[in-house]
Length: 437
Image (tube, rainbow, N blue to C red; front, side):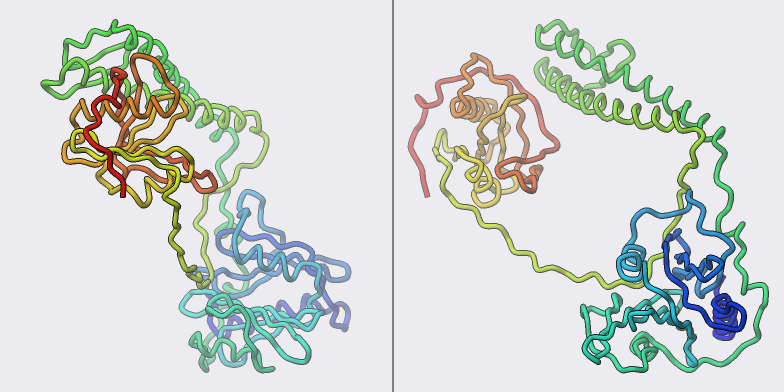
C-alpha cells in the first residue's frame, strides 16, 4: 500500500485524531515495538486505549497508518537494524506531536525528551533520521548518510533534501488506501496439521539418510583390515554405492573409500542435529509457526572498515631440503600461522596427521604428487608430533584449501583433502642438505 503525498497527509490527520481524548490532545507512551518484513508497529498507550502506529518499511508499503491490533507473532522478525535502533532509543518515551512534511512524503514523531524520529519515503525506499537536542544544538543520526552524527537546523524536514526531497503536488485521495488490508499484510499461515505432516515426512527422510551415514564405522573397520572387495569399478555396501574412475589402483580406490568415510561422518553429525530440531518442532504442534517472509530494509549505509593484514613471526618453524624439495614444520601455533600465511604459496602441499593432534608440515616443489615426497613429509609430521607407529595416517591438501580459524592461533579448516596411510621412514638419514632463509 503506497500512499501518495495527499494520502499521507490525510493518514496523519487520522493518526492525530487517535491522540485526542474528549477535546484534549493527550501524550501517548511508546510501550512496545514490533516489526514484520513490511511494516514496523509502535504500541502507543493513550489514556483509555492503545494505538498501534504502523510505519511502512518501503517497497509496497510507503506511508503511515493505524492498525486495530499488533503484528501477529508468526510474522514478527527477530532481529533487524531499524527495529533494534527504535527499541533502543524510543521505547518508554511519550509522543507529544505528529506532523507531516508540507513539501514531500515525510513525517516525524516528536518525543517528550525533545528528540524527533523522522521517516521519508523516496522511490519506495524508506529513509529515517533521529534528531536529538544537545546543549541547544540539534544533532542528527541518519543511517543513510555515512556520518555518525552531524548538526542540523531547527527545520528538521530539510534533512531529507540531500535524499531528493522536493515540493510535490496534491493528488486525488483514494480512501481505501488509508486503511491497510490486514488479510493481505498478514495472510494466514499454514495450519499446524499441515506443518506436522510435513515435518513427519522430513523426519522419515532424515532417519533413512542417517542410517546410511552410520555405515561408515563398518566400512572403516573393513578398510583398515583390508577386507574390502575393490576389484570392480563400483564399490557397493548395504545400499551405499561409490563409483571409481577407470584404471585406479587398489590403494587409490582405498583412498577414495576413506574420503567417503570422512563425508559419512560429517553427514551423521549433521543429520543427528537436524533430527533433534524436527522432533522439537513436532512437540510444539499447538504453537504458532514463524512465517517465512521477505524483509524490506530501509536505506542504511554500511561503513567499510580498514583491513590490516596480519603479520606473523618466523619463530616456531624448522626448515629442510630433501631430494630438492623444501620442507618446513611448525613447532608452535604461531609457527603454523607463519608457514601458512608467509612461508608457503597457494600450490604448496600441507600435511597433518589424520585423526590426531599434530605438527603442520608444508612442502615446496615441482612434483608434490610423488609418493616418496609425501612419505618424507608424513614422517616429519609424525616425528615432530611424537607419533611412533610404523604406519602414519595423514591428510593432505594444497595450501589454497586452508583457512585460519579466528581466535585459535595455529588452527585451520580445510577442504578437498585426501587421506593416506604411508610407512614411517627414517627421513633424517636422507637429508641432502640443510636450508634456511
